[in-house]
Length: 113
Length: 110
Image 1 (cartoon, each protein chain N blue to C red):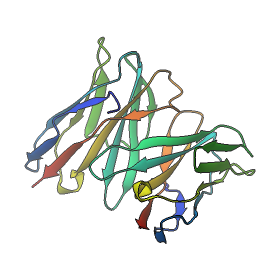
Image 2: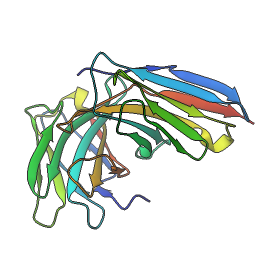
Image 3: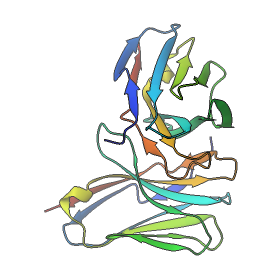
Image 4: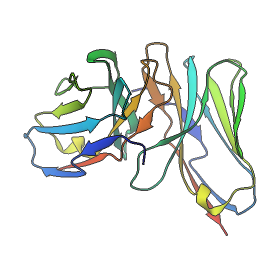
C-alpha cells in the first residue's frame, strides 16, 4: 500500500459524458501527478500540481483539467468523453516538487462505452 | 507524445538467470527512473538515477544512467518468481515532464 488513494476504482460511462476522478496523496506529500495508461499509448504523464498550483504539464488534452485543493487532494476532470479515453488513470504523489520519489495509487479504470 | 524505446518487449527466463533491459531516446534527460508494475496495481519506483554515468543498486537490481544522458539500463540478477511483472523506464526533464517506455514484460519460470 503506497498510501495514495484513488476513487472510484472503476467507472463506466457513455461517450460525451463528464467524470471526475479523485486522488488523496500520501500524508505530507505536496505534489500530485496524474497519468494515463492505455494499451496503445502506454503510460503518459498528464499534469502535476504542487501545493495547489500547476507545476508541469504533459500530454493532457484540452478536454481534461485538474486541480489541487487546499487539503492537497486532487481531482482530474474528463469531459466530452470519447471511446479512446478508456484507460487506467493513475495518481502519484511526492514530498517535493521535483517529483523523483513518486508513489503511485492503485488507479481508476475508466471505460467509455 | 514522444516515447522512449524500451527493449526487449518481453522476456521469458528461468529462475536464477540474470536479466537485462534498456531504454534509449533521442532526448537528453535530467533523471532516469525504473518502475515495476504488477497486474492491477500502480507502478512502484525501483531505482532513480540523477547523474550521467551514475550506477545505482537496489538489492539484486542495478541500473545505470548513460553517459550521453539518452539511455539507461536495468539489470536484475538471480531472478526469482516474484520478479514477474512489467518494468518501465522513464526519463524526466528539468520541468518535471516525463516520458515512459512501453515496458518490458518479464516472465520467470520456476
